[in-house]
Amino acid sequence: MVKVLHTSDWHLGARLYERPRLDEAEFFLKWLRDFIREEEVNILLVAGDVYDSSLPPGEAVGLYYNFLSELFRENGERVRRGEFKVVIIGGNHDSPLRLEGPGEFLRLGGVEVFGRWGEGLTPPGPVRIRVGGERVSIHPFPYIAPHEALGKAPRWNEEEREEYAKVLSEAMERSVEEGEDVRICLSHLWVEGLQGGGSERSLEVGGLGQLPLSALPPCDYFALG
Image (cartoon, rainbow, N blue to C red; front, side):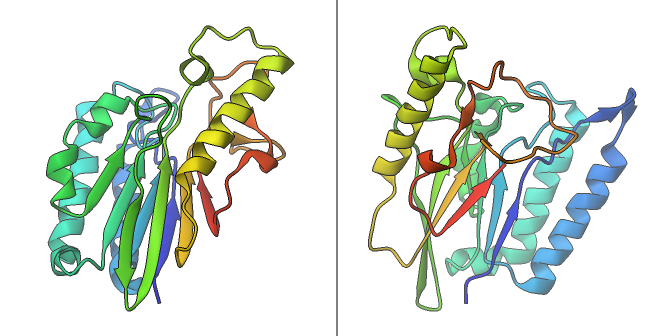
């Protein structure tokens, strides 16, 4: 049985009333590493907003890479056998280039990072893993702002909201292949009817960045952030 752990919105580097929350972040990452080991998780998903800003403090960056290096130290053998994978996508708070920068190096440790879509609104991926005869295909859809998806400055009206949803829906559906054992879609976006957490700061105006539930592609599990 493949074990998948879905996380999102770590917001490393966040502050509360100007007070750094690095101690809390460090505690969380230690707990997460312990949980992965104890439960023998095969796939760790991070559905965007690794950092709280596009320019995170050095201490937050250090926590992130220390976590990934410790994760590989504990799971290196499983990585080599193809039984452990980490898949991370960018969120609206992340810098795509900052996330993807060391991507080739991280891939050696079983970590796949996707900060942005490809040319022509082509989603990256998929990432595949096979454990005990079961195959899982992970389709990453990093955050993409309306002006990037539409190729123009948004006017924040209903017509463009529908166009944004249509463009993203068609692009995601094209990338999701049929005939796979388990299909997981990993994305950082707003879906109509879902309630966000109090810690999230919306960067969209007038609901343009929201997608109706019907716009999501056919996946067995949709991991949102």
